[in-house]
Amino acid sequence: MPIDAAKATSAEPRTTELAWDHKDIQLYHLGIGAGAATPDKPHPATDPDELRYTLESALHVLPSFATVAGGGMAVAGGLSAPGIDVDLAAVLHGGQTVTVHRALPVRGRATQTSTVPAVYDKQKAAVIVLRSEVADEDGPLWTCDTQIFVRGEGGFGGDRGPSARLELPDRAPDRTTERLIREDQALLYRLSGDWNPLHADPEFAKLAGFDRPILHGLCSYGVTLKAVVDTVLGGDVARVRSYTTRFTGVVFPGETLRIRMWEGEGRTQVSVTAADRDDAPVLADTVVEYS
Image 1 (cartoon, rainbow, N blue to C red):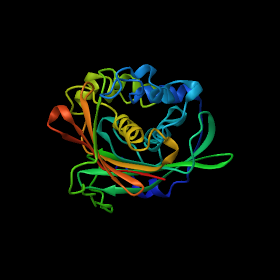
Image 2: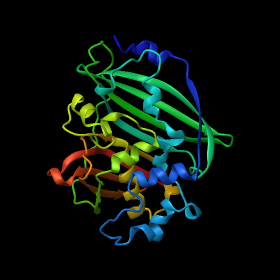
Image 3: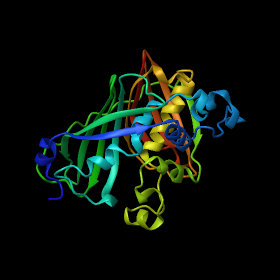
């Protein structure tokens, strides 16, 4: 079997040194649409609210940057873990959680410790759970939990894992906003470290079952967090404590994301759909928790 669940979950933690500076953060922010036009920002490139993401003298760090810090991804590291040997064309991102322990610095050096807490058997697929804990000399910075869906690798007799779903509130959303995904968005986003050809190469995309390259799930993830921070938190990234989602559908570059938000005490629940395809689901079970 390409996946040996027992070997993967019992392996020793792997450590990686991470480093980043303002250029990495600016590139990531541009990759998730910072500085791009939105319905309420007619001149986005010079809008003070956008310059917080794009100008080094005013820079702050959106917590979803944790998914690409150091120029790599937990996904890439996890797929090279002991006991795991899978075809990249069969891999999809299933879910993502970032837990923030303190505000991410604009410049940093840190150690990432990676483990595989679980491998779930969904019969027709396997779900690999990856955990990356990152700390610098001042202590913990963030924890990333990543779920990787691998088609065709289930049926090994393992635990099916959790299946609870988060229902949307039975009322109209408190806020709805839309974000256009540029035609070149995936090409720009992949420069932050996710080089999977699924997001750039039409021939590879066809091998994976898509008629053209799709947007990175983590790009939609970042676009959504930025929308919540900008509209609910007044742009204050330091208030974010955790952000979790389940990836439920693809986005093609050139489409528009419709982001609906239901606000609660210290949390906002979010639904993300593809507005151009009759609100086809994109992100579900999505919650941003904040102080």
